[in-house]
Image (cartoon, rainbow, N blue to C red; front, top):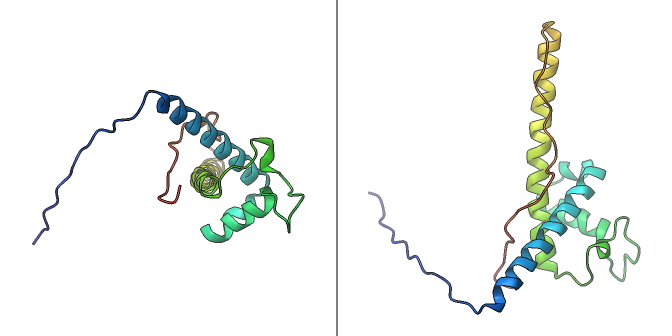
Length: 143
């Protein structure tokens, strides 16, 4: 027997100054996600790791700490003191986009090889990485 569920739709009421904060927050989130996507393009082997290991590897490559004072690609180029959960949400968004892009690229290469092996003309254009970013910022409970 199916279980009945109820959906409650509630509109948010916030002050006018919050609109600018939301826009700035999303803009920063997209900048950080784009930065991590470029890090993933430079270090494609990170995509072979699990999500937790990839998160750790990306933070070691980009985040300045006491043990890692000079990361390979510092996130400080985007902004100083980006909160950890915000940074991790952007990493997960970039990981998802990178996994999708490289999966599509792999399938395109396979289709191209198959067509060329049969001696057919292959005119399909390859997939391209995201040119612009418009991801919604993930806000966790602890944020």
